[in-house]
Image 1 (cartoon, rainbow over the protein chains, first blue to last red):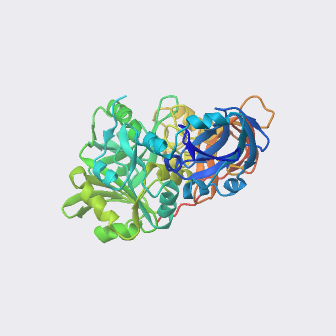
Image 2 (image 1 turned 30 degrees about the vertical axis):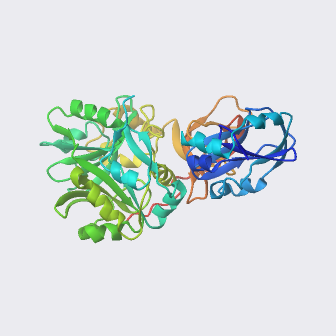
Image 3 (image 1 turned 90 degrees about the horizontal axis):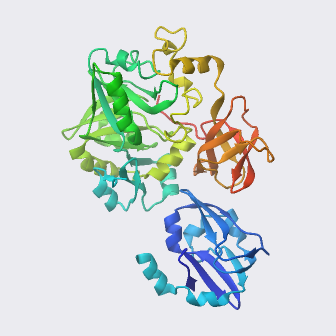
Length: 119
Length: 369
């Protein structure tokens, strides 16, 4: 599992990258009440806003962690956004293919992320 | 900006795991570990304890204090019986709202409870407007709110007499030598109490309440969603210097005696405009809004009459998810005559999404009248 400074986790399985937010991020957001997912087939550029998450407190975004294309979204989250708070590492948001897989090498591993949020 | 001031209960908030945020110049708990949703639902089901010590408690004393205060608020203060409290607003000369407040007749003085973020300005307005009276902001009293169906039982376990109070009664009680000023009121839509406690006893009293069956600490997050469901305006969002009390739907708080034709009609700042709006209707009005789907519409979302309209016709001033309603709820200002049930479109991240005009409140209050 890899982690970004935007508190996303990425799991690469044979070139398909599954993306979610970390437990730390979910705790900071508070109860999630609405999730807006991107369309399957959408081409995305790193840094662009692709998911809207609304918690009881505020709206926030998930930014595309890599260049690529959305191949699948977790429709269960739209019906039950609270899954993000129940288990953030299981509540994936979307799966993507990427044209820049090498960028994942520079992302934090679990220990690195733990250190990052401890600061 | 100055560092936020810790509340007298700062130590207890830390012990309870409160997540502290700056609010109204103070460091305040936005939530505890249970989270906003659970805290909101718990308050509706049992009882929630809120630290509202940031609010201003202002004592006005002197002969004719009630009549004098009527020159600053469009409220029947002189007719307020001893031991009773009333909601009202401080107004500006142009009819805008300077703050909203509670005023209680406590016998030899009036007690005003005002918003924390506005209390210093309020004090200036009151001192300037009441030059012949003593106007004092109490620094030696903290304030708690205990709200929800179990509030009466929990408070009565410590202060038996409180159970006999009716909605908007105020009274003085003793708790283990501490003098408590209690009112049966709140900002959640639930039955409950607001309790003024000497600062040096607030920690012990709060702990004694939290030890009662069903009482849980509640943060600002749930306070906001509870009052939103109850249709209550928040000063700074739904009430501002640019909004009149009539536009805000607070005509009910302007008693007949202060209206045109009443014995003490007018005589408060902005009376011309406010009385005219009461008679002829304002240009716009505060309404409830129910966004379609699950996406909340928050303060600042612009409202349009159609998907194509270029100029907005209204604005959302408060909004979020209503845990008891189970859907997003909001309030805002729309042109007068916009019927309940009609549909406007809120601009959410560049898309126009339908929102239905709804009656306020979203949650019917359960006061003990």
